[in-house]
Each structure stands twice: as C-alpha cells, then as structure tokens.
Length: 131
Image 1 (cartoon, rainbow, N blue to C red):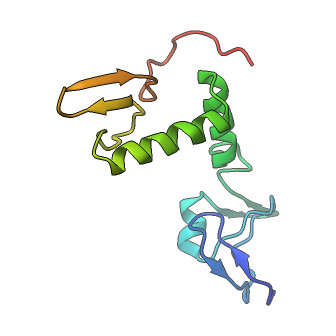
Image 2: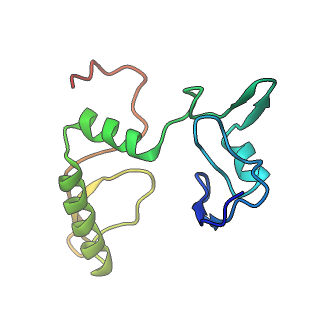
C-alpha cells in the first residue's frame, strides 16, 4: 500500500494504491481493474504480465521515436510543424486532421495547398528503414 500519488499507465489518472492489486511485475500500474485489463494485464501462477512486458504494445515515446526516425523528421521539426499547423488552423487556413499530416498551408480562397508530409496508413512494405 502506498500513500504516494501514482499515475495510471493507461488513462493518466492520479491515484493512491491502497489495495495493491493492479501492478504488473514489469512495474506498470493502473488505477482500476478496467485500465489494467485494457493494457492486457494478466495474473499468472507465479507473477503477472501485461501487453508491454509481453512485447504486444509499446509506450508512446517508443512509437514517436520510431515514426520520426522512419520519416526522417526530428521531434523538434515535428513540434515546429505542429505549431505552424495550430497557427494556420486558428487563422482558418487549413483543414482539421483526419489521421494524416497533409498540408504545410492551405488558402481557402485560392483553393491552393502546399503538401509537405503525409503520415497515414502506409502499405505494409514500402522499403527498409535505416536507422
């Protein structure tokens, strides 16, 4: 039991672990049985496991590193693109995201778009990723 505030690895909610039942052997912790189940938590005879320690899922930071490396964009570049997107969105000069980063800029009056990068559902195999 802990009276130290913890953060749920699934939903981000701050909680106190008074009952100690939602911990994985790998260190993952959850605020509820529901969050634990959503991350694949399973109690086993001699321990426990979850999607992360079984290698079935990955932390967002790992996925971000993989994607930025795969498309050759640094995190700083991505932050810059996102800031520009937010600025253009607030000015009404770009469309909302639908799972893709499509436009560098978009002028609704002239109906002109400058395409900068596309992130979306890519074919299963498009080539090798060199890191």
